[in-house]
Length: 493
Image (cartoon, rainbow, N blue to C red; front, side, top):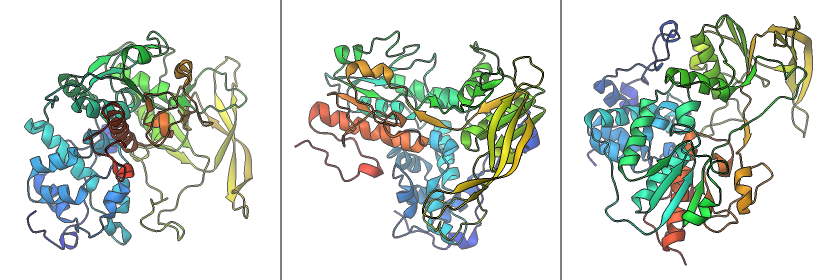
């Protein structure tokens, strides 16, 4: 490494890659991010990294990205080497660079009393540069083993597991029940956050590396689950956590109430000029209520803007987080603070401490027209959980379209029960320390194994399960672990 340039954080203020003007961007489905960035700007941002003796940014990253190294490499204009360092721990850095909430930045030492390094922007710029320069190419294995591995699901966990196992020389087949590969990255995240050509070029890369993809292939449906045992030496279940949390409230059966993923998937399919199955969900000219204050809820709010909604109200049951860290939430813990989402920047009503009670059909046509809700206040209940007190009852909010974005509860595990796979109480697949289920050779990864989580966790889980599968098949492995399992042995005993 060349000599660092200390004190960059004093010379340069934090300046991440920006977003387009909210009024402009909500008129289309192009990415909200500015498409152009200046190399000198990113070099300055990389120089802000302090090369800490204990790089807490790395411990804050679930996959242990070697962040100080590629910050410095960007500062020194060695973009190709920066890309290699980035790919050493992350198969798909654009998935995270565009979509991760960046726990690494919250853990940056500068975040203790200053603005953290723009890690996410630098990561995004590195991989964008890699594609532009043609540095990202297929890397098929030089030799092949005699082992065949099935991967069920093509989201971040499934794709990272597939790429790692293929590079170890195994014959990998990925089963995807949708018509296109990518899982959440393809149909769950809206185009305005992540355009789908970014997914497709990775799929093309993996296919060129020798991975086989079967789409419209639902294991447990048109693909017998027994095929996993009959045709493969091992299998990885990476189906995600697709069961949405429902609200069992009066009026739930009214028309016009839909789950978030159904809503987002429809618009992504429209943008891709594909057929849209099921009843048409469109916010044009409607009063829209989005129940749920997380990232998925924000994506629904932004989609409603683009469809031409009359009004969009986003409701959260919990209180609005504080702007500054509270005393019981010190660095380097992840901050529980308020940050306006890209969707709210585009204009919408945010409501906190609102408890929905009922969906109402006012004119008797079978469709929702409003919701009734209570305004509440949360109070600490001593040793128990906080208690809610109603401060205003039966508040009516107009709603011609209600989108439920209150989270996900479990993977769809029933297709794998004929194999005898044990299921945890929370619906995830039960695994041991090697990520293998109670059925020999059947592993689980991503949300199917750990419950709903972040894209970066899924990539790390996919890398780890590939390592365990390789070890199971061959007795040894050269595949690297993610941060969470870095102390595990790489040779079986």
